[in-house]
Length: 202
Image 1 (cartoon, rainbow, N blue to C red):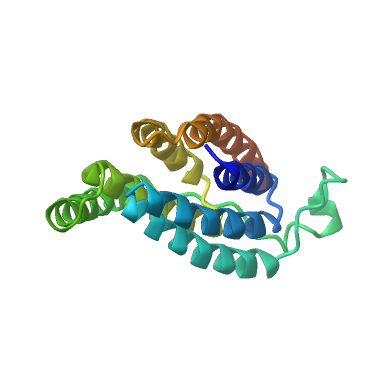
Image 2: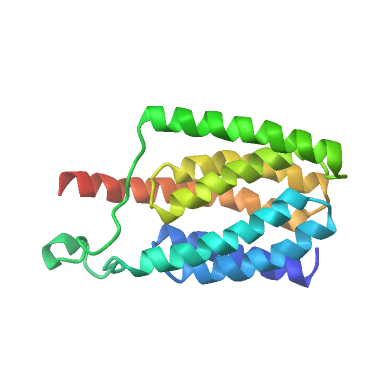
């Protein structure tokens, strides 16, 4: 645990909390946190996790642009539909069961391939778990930029597995962060689902 990890953790928490509130500034917190984690993960030989942070930076830039094209929700008025705000805001979407099956098969296949490659050609720690959390996080991050409701369910699974991964590398504060992530992902799912149901009934 050091100052760099503490800053990365605080900014990562800020990102999730702001994302739950659908505030565009969340992507700025994500960018800085990911930059710090590139250094952290490379130092402890979690190479795919380090590479994942670079992807996070790219996706955060895309998220900043995508969310910026829509007006942010008007939290001061619960009946924003009557004021015309919701039609400018990116709507929360969902996937069909078939889309989830395809996504899970793709994640599993890529995880096995990447894990095998990392085991064979690098000194990566826990290559298959590292690969699985990385590939799944790539998908889940993209889902956030598209405001897909189920992204939170994917994050619950990813974060739960990541807790053990980071504990194995003595990143105790980051492991604690991911315990918080699990809780926040549950809150995020419930919050977004309420709004999605309102959209369906509008």
